[in-house]
Image 1: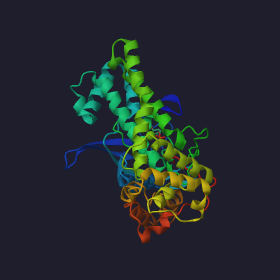
Image 2 (image 1 turned 90 degrees about the vertical axis):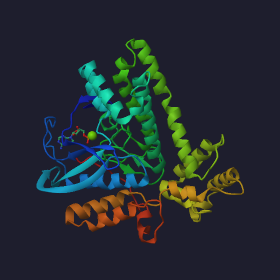
Image 3 (image 1 turned 45 degrees about the horizontal axis):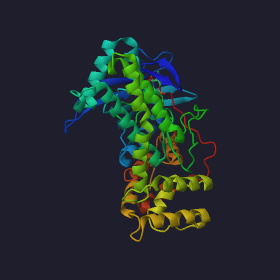
Image 4 (image 1 turned 90 degrees about the horizontal axis):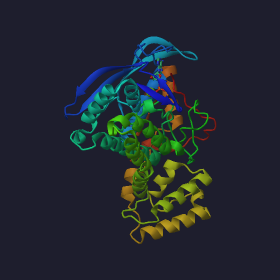
Length: 403
Ligand code: AMP
Ligand code: MG
């Protein structure tokens, strides 16, 4: 594959991942099985093709958490240490992640094929449609319909990310799966205090992949995808551009629809009213102003009238009154709220704690306790209480892609 990395085009190919093949699951689904970190490939360029234990366990933990939250994601079957050292800033233990995915076809795969020739591109598109959108095989204008289907999945996915405060961290086009699964967990992290400008990745200095930019970046990535499909959409370039542009320009509205539907659930609203988006946004504005924890605020609201110093704030009280008026005497659906507002997310400091116990002390118990809590994110269990606290101080916290 190829890809736009931080806006610039690069030829890539997988430098440290090997597709073992496809597997038919007992329920009839088809998945790819891949090793990540298994050594040099013909695309490794200057890299060693290896992976360190910490970053592979990080992918394992976060992808498990995402799956439990109900968000489409590639899966992690296993992380196995190789017994060899991997040399980064310091020598680290090498490991291989076994990844399972609906497929590993990325926007970047199309960027590569489109730069070869049209026959290759068409073969890839037909294969991807067959695999991910079989109902479109006979559709009129099937490549345009495919673009719409991919855009729709991405809109839904990024809305799900926004709704739980997930920051992917490295949304290059080679890390965007056509299937609509979250893929490639590198410097990703969950936001604590609500702030659209939140960035954790050490290499994202300009904040290109900040939390609040994610929907726009998905649209940008889809524009790169649309460009590859132009010759298939219509042999007449102008007609192809016009049709693709219409899909791309419709993206913000599609995203907003998914996001608002999710926000209504987060606020326990079981009907649609015109002021709902504004109601949600004014809560977020207040959260940003007082640096309220994104996850815990929604969880607090899910449990009845929220208690605590922060909620005595006049601006919050005004918002709360507005929300109460919106839901009327029956109140919000707390049950619905508790089913979408997680109590437990993989807090960065908890993930780091689990990784350092595993990497530095060969102690997996910290990670297993964390994984246990992450497996039922929508339940409030006493034994998981410690995982609900945000870090005392996360100033300067940075994530690394670990390559
Ligand atoms: P990523 O930022 O993880 O999506 O990686 C971007 C590209 O760099 C992918 O094609 C990777 O396969 C490649 N890459 C990452 N780490 C290594 C490594 N240690 N050796 C060779 N290639 C790598
Ligand atoms: Mg990648």
